[in-house]
Structures are given as C-alpha cells and as structure tokens.
Length: 418
Image 1 (tube, one colour):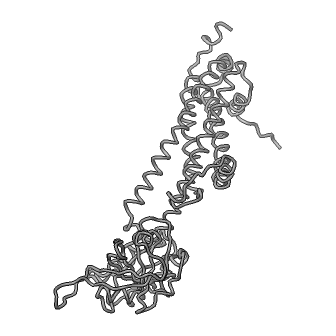
Image 2 (cartoon, one colour):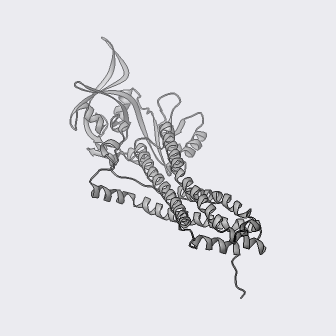
C-alpha cells in the first residue's frame, strides 16, 4: 500500500501549535488564548443551561394553571361545549379537554378583602389538562362537589384573607341581581376545603377554585361554560395545534394557545436569554483577540522559517494555510474543552451549588423570594451546537489577519539579518 502523506501545511500548522517557543511568553499567550476560549464556551453553556432550566421551571408552573390551549365562544358563554370538546379531541395532538368557568370576584372574610380569579372546574376532568392536584398542600379537588359550595384557595390568598380549611369566605361577583330594595351584587358563602401552592405569586395570591356548576350559577351562565381547556402532546406545538383547530372551527369557536396568556412575559424571557448570551459571548471575543496577539508574535518569531519555505517554492497561499491551521487548532482545542467542561458542569450544577452551600454556609436561592429552592439546569443540544460553531468560526476569522501577514513576508527582508 502507498503511504498516506499529510500535506505539509497541516503538518507545520500542528507542529507550530505543539512546539515550545524560544520565547516562553509566546507559548504562555497561546495557552492562555486556548484557555480563554474554553472558559468563554464553558460559561456560555452553563449560564444558558441554567437560564433554560429556570425558564422551563417557570413555564411548567404557569402551564400548571394556564391550559396549553383554550376554546371559547365569540359571544360570551359557550353553550355547546360538549361538541367543542369532541371536535378538539379529534385532533391527533390533543390529549384531553375539560370545561371551565372563569370570572373576577371579590373574596371577603371579616375585614379582610381580596380580589381573585374565580375558576370553576370539573374535579374529574381537570387533572387531565392541568397538574393542580399535585400542588395541593391541604385538601383535595375531589372535595369540590356540585352544590357543596366548597372553595380551594391559593396559599398566599388564604393568608391574605386569614383563613384555613373549614373557614368561611364570602364570594362577591360583578353580576348584579335586582331585589325589592334595589340592585345588589350576587354573593355566596363558601367553605374553604383546600389550599394549593403552585410557586407563582400570580396564582397563589389570585386564584380560587370551585366546582364548575357552583361557578356557573354564580356567573348566571346556566348550563353554559366560559370555555374548554386543552392539553396537547407537546406544549411547544400548541401554537400550531391552535392554528389548525381555529381553521377547522372557523366562525364557530375562538381558539388561542398558551403563549397569548403570557406573551409579554415569555418574550421577556427570550430577550433576557439572548442578551445574556450576547454579553457572555464577549468573553469568547476577548479570547479570540488574544489569539491574534499570540499568532502575530508566532509569525514574527517564525519569519526565517517562512522565508526558507518561500525560497524552496512555498506559495503565499500555503504559508497562509499553515497559520490558519494553527489558529484553527487553538480554536478546536479551546471549543472542545469548553464544551466538555460546560456540559459536565451544567449537568451537575445543582450538586455543585448544594456542596458550596454546605461548605460555605450560605443559601444561593431564597425559596421565599424566588419560589424555587434549587438551581435547575436544562442542557439543550441546539444551544451547545450554536455556541461551539460560532466560537470556532470567530477564532478562525480572527486568525486570518496574522495568517495574511505571514503570507506577505518577503524572504529577502526576513533573511537579511539572519
């Protein structure tokens, strides 16, 4: 077999990267550049993974109360909601559906008054579209029976009203009723049968659950409901599913997905992630600038080698390729080491933070303030791939300048004082 020879440009490029420089400072700058790229890539992966984890945690908590998609009527109450549920379930991506009634109410207990979103649910169907059953601190959704006039409150809402299970609260609705003494607001006494805690202030302090028929009577809906909640197979496909259902139910029902409920909030999370990624990417840029410095110094040191190569027939393109290979090698090693270190750190960040908390005696995350007692992490392949690719491209682009300078070295000038 004929031996496979490596092109000399690649051989010299790798050799210049591995070889110990006569000037130790140049070798130090080269290693520092590689470490800088590694640290930058590692920091980007860890920070974005932690942000992904936080966003996922918040999203799941919000979607524990807000459905993946909803079907409502154009004219208020949804009377033929069984048909809407049947049509929705025909879509292959819709797992289940449940009716609901919603209205803004006032809750009163003695001198304590609080506004809340009253949500009437079917205790048998609701667990199929939301995970509120898993968030119950006290009591159960099964206690919400028709005409029982039981109510389940968020933890902070119960604290604001000063009530616990077994206590009474008065629910006042905006639907007025006419009496012999004038127009009066509709109100009804309910018994607190349970308390839930989602971990999101908006829900824990502003949502009250009751049986759907009790809520419909308070809202004077009769047999109608506010709408139908849907659970889809993949919540990230909810928007597409909502579009398809809306097209199928055109001019009959109004369909919207979960992003409509908290669009500004979720857009803010995306913007935060993009800006944080951009800021941290400056670390990679700083490291890439150090690659330029290191390679310019290498080019200066290797001028005699470049001159000899030129005199024996090496082209400017070959000389440029040698130093591009050197810059690319620095980038590859820096990026690969950064990806390995970043992924390992991101996958174990919760354990590392817990160990540091025990060692140093501090609490990294105040659960009373952030509703989250741990540091979640979600390593996404797309983020890691994008970070590694862009970091490598930046390193190669920054290596072009010293490589081009090396290609312009004139043999006669370089060898004049040798």
